[in-house]
Structure formats: structure tokens, C-alpha cells
Length: 171
Length: 160
Image (cartoon, rainbow over all chains, first blue to last red; front, side, top):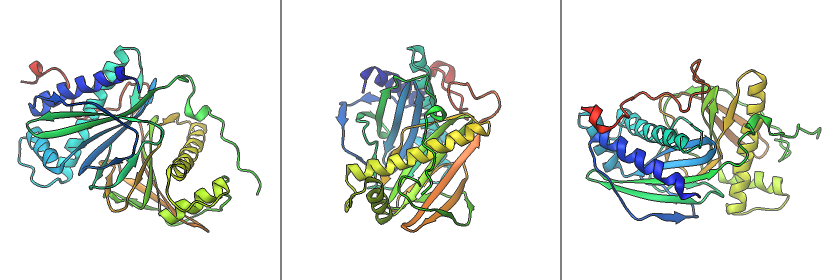
């Protein structure tokens, strides 16, 4: 994966978390992982389609999720319920949206998908042949990990509906 | 289903709003464009292995990377084929690369998208297709990103 796709996400995460939750972030050590990812308590999954394609995960523990939601809503979120869930998913959406704006400024037009959220420890998420770049971001609410499994799409003009799929043979 | 040479019959449709408790294997693919949202294919490990065995023409007994990519690819081809049909119906959309979630019992939530659940029965077992899709608001088709509810993404100075 190209490291130049990394900066927009770190920048966006920093800006958005500072604006929404008033939390300053420090970046931890980067790592590249080819193996599947064992989920933390909360994982937000958002896909990118366009000049850069792939998947972005934001993972955090339940405590961090609740603390972030509490700061966003301005009211205590003890359990990670519907309101807190939509808050955290929205946070992922805003960060990715902001990153996509930054990416388009550097010449990569991308569209992002709506977020999906996985709750529960120990499931395995595989991005198959996309290796993941992992960026740990630490603040006073806890740790938020960004997993980037992205690559440049060299065949940009090709829209998925144009790819020929064979018709069902008569079997 | 031509790849695995199985006939699928559709079971009863239902609409669900709650989070899904995942099956052994879940393939997650996102759609963007005039139709946007998430498509999930849930199947048991046994079903996945027998499907892959049929596709590859060899016996797969464990969910290794070959089997995983076979199942993900199946989801990819089904969704790709569906976008062709959607575009024939006048909805242009594009799909994301597949993500594979293994391990049962975690909760997958599509948030404010309610899901149409389509069980497909084959002679190898069940595949449950979850469709959490909606058509994009008019004028948003060419926009750079999906509409955001919280619009305070400006710098911290304008936040106060």
C-alpha cells in the first residue's frame, strides 16, 4: 500500500477528533500486517471506491467507544447502546469523508460507502489480498486504531457494471 | 450459482432493524453510487467449504486462505452481477472489494439502514443474503462522499 494514502487519514482523524471530542491525538508506531485482523470490541468498517479502493477499519475498546460518545453527546454513555453506536459510526464516517476530501485534493477522487459496525471481540476480519497498514492513535480517551487496506485503482474508467460477467450456462 | 452448479430457491423475506449476529462466515461488500449501502452474505463454515469444493473441483476441508478467497470471490461475482442488473434498471452503482468476517456470534450493525433478509436454500445448505441498501438522494450521485449528519468537520477554531 502506498504510504501517501496514510497522511489524509491521520490528518482527518486528528482534526475530527479534536473538533468533536476535544481530544488531542499522538500517533503511535506504524505497522504493516498481512494476516487477518482479530476484532476489538468495536470496529467501524468503511469502504472506498474510486481512484483509491479498499477498506478502512477503525477499532477501539468499549471503554474508549463510550468515552468518545460521552464527549460527543455531552452526556454520559455508560453502555454502548444505539445512540453511542451511531455516534461512533458517524465519527468514522466523518473522518473518512474528510480524508476523501484531502485525497481528492491530491488527485485521487474517491467515494466512500456508508459505515457498518461490528461489535464483539474475537471475530476475524480478512481483507484478503490487501495488506493492512495499522496506525495507532492515542489520546486521553484511549486508543483508536486505524487499519488501512487500500490500493491505487489503475483501471479507473472501468465501472463495475461494465465488467463482463458470464451468463448462466444451461446446466 | 453457475460456478458451484447449485440451484437456489428463495425462502421467506423479512425486514430487520436490529444488528445481525454473525454466522460462521460473512462476506461484506459495500455499494456506492445511485444505490448505496451494505450487502452481507452469511453462511455456515460447512456450507462455505462445500461451496468452495464445488467451485474448485477439489475437496476443501479447512477454511484456509484459498477457501476464504473463493467464498469472498463468490460474493464479489454475485454482487457484481447484481450491479449489472441494477444498472439495467437505471441505477448505476459501484462495488467495493469484499471483506471477509469469520467467527460467529459477533454483532454486525448497519445502523440506520434496515435490512431485507433473503434466505437462499440450496442442496448444500443456506446462504442468507442481507441487503441494507437505499437509493441515494437525488443530486448526490456524483458527490464526493455520502451525506453526513454531523457537519462540523471544519477546523477547531470554528467549532466554538
